[in-house]
Image 1 (tube, rainbow, N blue to C red):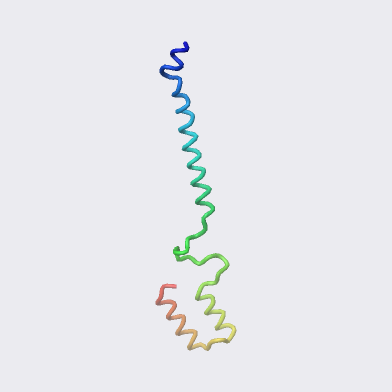
Image 2 (tube, helix red, strand yellow):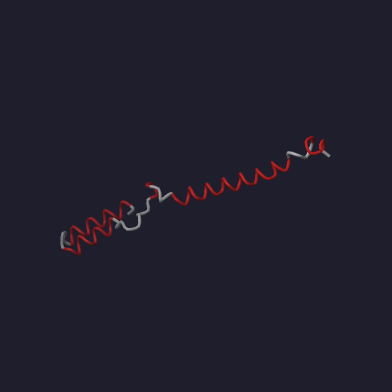
Length: 83
């Protein structure tokens, strides 16, 4: 019996135990890493809490900082730039 344990199948149970545990550990590390990352700077999306350029323009017009002609011109420029 001792020769069977050390000769052939004795070490395989370790491999069958460790490999799935390593795979699970890698998956957990990836999930945690990706969930902690915020939106990337180049994603093009406006971060929550930050007003968009159009919102800022609307606020300036509403406060009377710019007149209607200036508002319309800048709104058109924002529309052309893709914002």
